[in-house]
Every structure is written in C-alpha cells, then in structure tokens.
Amino acid sequence: MSAVSRFFHALSVSCVAGLLAASTLIAGPSGLTPGPVELQSVGPMAFASSGVLLVADPKAATIYALATEDSGSAQDAAPQIDNLPAAIQSSLNLDGKVELGELAVNPDSGNSYLTIKVGDQVQLVRISGAGEISQVNLDKVMHAKKVLPNPPEDKEVSRRGRTRNARNESITDLAFFDGKVLVSGLAAGDAPSRVIEMPFPFAENSVMTSVEIFHAAHGRVEDATIQTFLPMNVDGQPSLLAGFTCTPLVRFPVNALDGSEKVRGTTVAELGNRNTPLDMLVYEKDGKTSILMSNNNRGVMKISTDDIGERESLTEKVDNGGTAGQAFETVVALEGVQQMDKLNDSHAVAIIDQNGTFSLRTIELP
Image 1 (cartoon, helix red, strand yellow):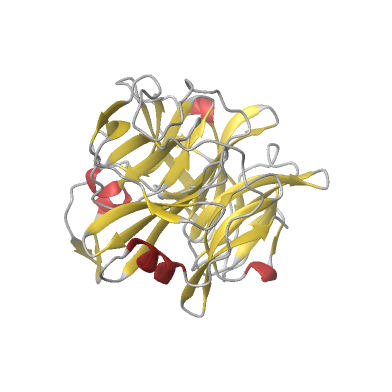
Image 2: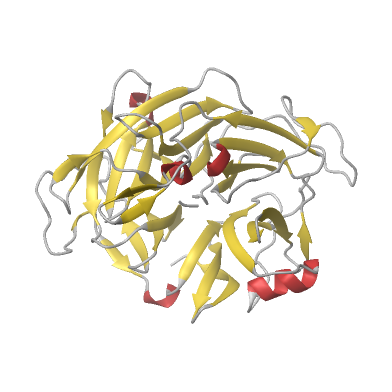
C-alpha cells in the first residue's frame, strides 16, 4: 500500500509457475529474465505467487515482478522491532537517514519486505521472522517489467496554492487477483483516474478503464483517484472495493472494467472527510467477513461486508464530516498504524507510529 494493499492476498488466486528457491540465481517463473532493477521511487507492493513480489515505481510509471527466491514455512508472527529505521540503518551499515516506504508480507514464508529511501537511493529490504534484516540485491535479479502507457507528465504544477506532481500518483495501488495484476492510478488526459488489468507476468494486452464515483462528502460526481483497493468476491462476483480520499468506499465489478467506457462505481460508504485511506485487507473472524482499513487521520476502521453486494450507491451529500452506508467501527487499540499487510488468517504485520518512532509489530485481526 497505498496507496499498497498493498497488502491483500486475493480470496481467489490462480497460481503462477513454480519458483525454485536456492542460494544462487536460477531459472525463475516463465517470463522473468535476469538483470538489474533500479527503483526511482517508492510505490505500493504486493506478492503474486511463489515468492514473486510486485513492486511499483510511480516515478518511472513501471511495475516490476521480482523473483525473491523466498519460500518455506510461514511464521506465526513478525519480529517486534521498536525503532525500525534505526534497526535497518544499523543492520545494513547505512549512512544517512532511513525513510520507510511500503510494506508487503510473503504469505509463503511470513517474511516482511519493505522499501526504504536513503538519500536519493531506493532499496528493498527483507525482514525475516527471526528478525534478521538484509538488503535484497537488485543488481541481477530474475524479473519482468511493465511500463504503463500514457502516464501523467513528470512535472510540478501549481493550482489554488498547492503544488503537485501527478506522476507521483501514476500508480497508487496494485494487487494480484485471479491470475492477473490489477493497478490503480492516474493517466494523462481528461479522464485521469483509471484501473489497469494486465496478464502476469506481463504482456501487451493490458485493459485500461477510466473510473468515476459519486463523492458523498462533496455531493458530486468526480474523477477521484483510488488510493487503495481490495480485489475480492462479493456475492460470487469478482469486485474491487476502492478507498478514496475524504473517504468514500466504492465497489466496482471487475467484469465492468473492460476498457469500453468510463465506469461509475457504487459508493457503498462515506467514512468521513479530511482523511486518506492507506491500506486495506479482508479477513474472516467469528463467521463474519470484515475489511480492515488504516487511515492517515481517522485511525483503523473495521468495516462490515454484510449486504455490501446489494447496497445501492449513495446519491445525497453527506455534510459536516458525517458518515453513511456500510457499518464500521474504529479500532482504538490499533492507533498509529501506518502500513499493514496480512500475515495469516488471524494476524497482520504493521508499521506503527508511536510518537514519531516507527516500530514493526504483529497485530491480531480484531
């Protein structure tokens, strides 16, 4: 995530070709070739299958599939690291401030992967279940890449007193679902918000669909940018549940995202204004399916999925930071969660801001 989901493993996943784990670089899944990968920016990440990590580089408008050669029995918990940037800096003997990027957990091994930025350099780090921190060597790695067509121009634009580079949102989230890669972000042009579906590892026949929503907090239809999303089956229908700034939750049928026309999603909830969703994951507990959403300003929300497939779209303005639609509760015990990804059926790995110090923790799914 988000952007990242960056931290969801789809409910219905088709396996890619097997990946052999070894200490030396060996043949990987079909379509991956050895070579260097140089990341220009930090973007969302998600695991596909068999240790293949999807890494987004918004600055380059590029998606990479990296063979991590990471397999084995999944761990029940991640290591507890009180000061994560300091631990990374010490373990890797890095000079300069360590800025944390995006988090993804390998469901096969339970190891956590994290992008970091030191100066102008973006690096990929692995944190094992035993707490060992190591740098992933990208100088010669089995990989494939996909450069996205028609990204926003890479330049700063000032409007209404704000300066923004739309290229930084060329990729806001990505996920592996039903054997394909799904990507959200911005394009150049008059209908910028889009979802891209592409084969895995990658091919030319990508499908790009412009999307729009009714934004209840603003009371109007908008080409808003998806910040994070979940692919999941809703009443047997493959769907995307997408979170937007300020904070609509919107359902899109995957089958409707066929590139033929702009698709307006079904706004199933308004979760409050002045807020941006960061990550979402889905889980089952006590016979109920719930969505866990972390936010930059409204804590962690546990959102009910009851009747979410039958809910009609919100069509009226929701004033004064109010909420409407799907029921949810704020999980007070998870205050400060900035990044999260599912570890197993009952736990997730999270990066938590504790008064400005970022720690790595295993959290129980509420």
